[in-house]
Length: 440
Length: 79
Image 1 (tube, each protein chain N blue to C red):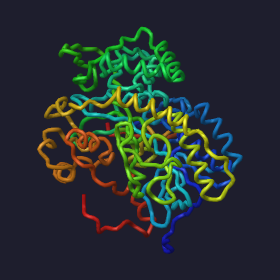
Image 2 (tube, rainbow over the protein chains, first blue to last red):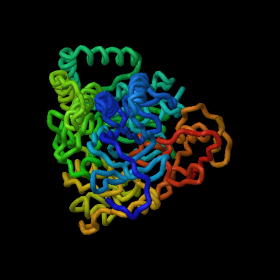
Image 3 (tube, each protein chain N blue to C red):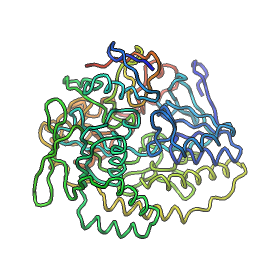
Image 4 (cartoon, helix red, strand yellow):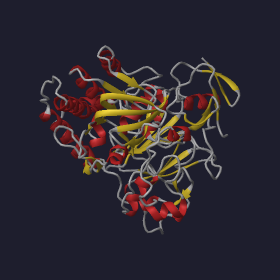
């Protein structure tokens, strides 16, 4: 512990990172067991992505849980990000309260997932968004009424995004799913074994009646003069078509956000088609005292995230000697995971992505690095040093995901800061990570 | 509540994101210009891509998709 620096210090027996379904459930169980809990989230209002606040008002399940957490003394820090991990079970955090050192006895990572956003010609034009991305912006007041939107890519999130956009007054002029009819039919068979999911699908489907559903087709390019005006699609057999639109919302499923866990040294393992934080049945990671729950351990939906969050809450309560009921929902979680495996198999990301890139397609949006500058590089580190690809604000969270998949390059280790921070925040602490590790 | 976007006054509802306020004030203006000078709008909506970065009340590099408007807030874009 550094003694000479001048930074406010916080401590909680249980620190939960991420206030989505997993983090809220973990905080509720741990606090009900009598443990001091601090819950931190980067967004201005808790809830995460699936339970995202609408116009600043917390979603109903979030409000209900927060109402239970407040009397239990759970401290919620919204709008606050983890900047880096520090020695002796601590994190450097930054938010409205300024830079602070946050010490924990047990840490529960519930950092969720992000959209798989893949580059294609025209994807940097204004008016092109992630599918979940536009859904999130619209919930925050982004004007969409009367605008023509194409929703494209793959996965169930496209349906949810299209439904939200339509409810807010958008004209959804195309819902474009890459999966082929045979795969979708197989998936429908899986749905029959999961009545809750089938009901959700029926509800979503009925809210999308009249929307053109275009299967086995993919986005070739977004085009327009200074902003998106039309989307080029290619279907089976090479048939092409063009749809005029004001916005394109495109996403190819979700990927676990593992960076904080990786920086703590937590092992990864492939889960439902993407690298995820590896956990045991009690949600413990490979690092002592660090647990993980929800989509950072594999993308499996909100119900699985809640169940895992509860399991993590019970696990820390047992480890810290607090009263806790045993967690007995392993079979329910297994059912959710079986469904997640079917989703991952049906809506897998396309394997042929390099063929969709043109020489001038900007793979790294932060630094404007085109595909032509990257495809001759031997590995990610060389690409980064030679082109600045991955050295901008997103720190490679978009482009390195793409290049690792397209070029089969190994990923680079995660380096601090985990999110961009003012120099004053970094200067507030005296302990800094070793500078002996090789430059990347 | 009242905010300003690049000096122009704008009325927004409570709970409006800074990124949304910019689109309401000036459709298509976006937030930042890329190093090559290309106009950009938010992409991910959840604080990952950084395309929504703007100046808020004199503080540079605030994420417009992770910041709610507050009364009197001064928002400045690159554009």
